[in-house]
Length: 237
Image (cartoon, rainbow, N blue to C red):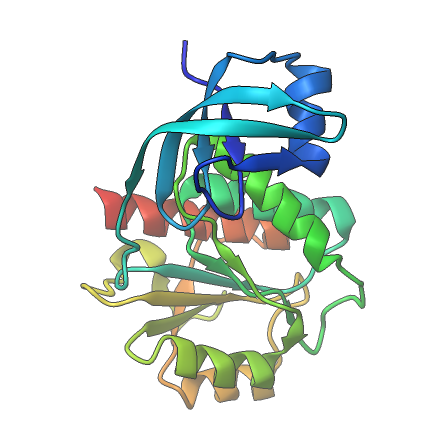
């Protein structure tokens, strides 16, 4: 049976746990003083800890042992999906986190159905998925922006990345054949209505390659999960 894991922003001696993580520890799992668990900060640190004491609104831990692993700086996978309605984007965030995606950049395309997303909620979903799948690094979740803004930011953040976008056009090749080598990979996933001609031209101007997933039109979250699955399997194989 694997050790129960909790998320902390930082891990030091006498680390404390509060809010949702504290409620999960006390109300759901009903852990007590002296119980052991693991702590992870989403930045590569994993610690074995024991509950030192439980107060009214927080738990205090004693760290028994900790390791910090280096954060990979290449072969990162960045998903740039169109915003989708509430629970659909929740699912996208959870599954892309489980699969090992390094960043998610919610984007407003021309045919995106206007939705508001709660950035903090997505971060909490990613944290719960990180704990469940035993990841050490929390994916970055960007604030929503339009496509031109996203492109400019991604070019700065990932200057050596290979850029691709999902397309049903005849000129696209299977994503299975795309090879980013040792570089990062940024994949743009438009809404169900597809990318407009101007958006495709905008992406081609940064040498983004059109790739196909299937012969069918996929929902946003399905396309994102499919692309993430293929790219992470190819990277981690």
